[in-house]
Length: 226
Image (tube, rainbow, N blue to C red):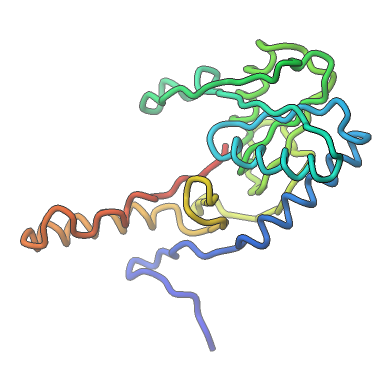
């Protein structure tokens, strides 16, 4: 009988649920669904939500160009100042919002993000979009829907529905920023416990130098969506 490995504290390390082939297949499928539901995607505008939503939107843009033979308008959306947790979390660096030359007025805007979780990120994105213009309609495309919604928000295009518990973290890795395409799920506290153990080891063995173990905690749980 095989069992999934756990840490001494009983925490489950991240395990892969999607690989690069799966991610590519999902993007292709979502692109075809956008074309079908958007009647050829003639008035579609893609807006990627920073950070990984931007990279996913670019991939959807390229795939839509292959399918339709047209250059679908592509932009980015920064939601930093529209988040409802600004007072609860450390200050965040602001990103750039870039709207295509044709704008969003009267268009079918497809917001793109990596993970749909509580729905608060998407609420912030809708608020940011309302300050830019008035689209004909707004749709949402996500790579992963992990459930646990706190607001009445639903994705129109979903790469994978991934049932999770609240103690778990979903980590999306994209080759553009992480060196590979993958989706991993693991216990939320695993990375924190691993970092604490690493710090203890470094204190116990200072002769190893400041570079010892560097990097193992740089990709601590980046639960990508809300």
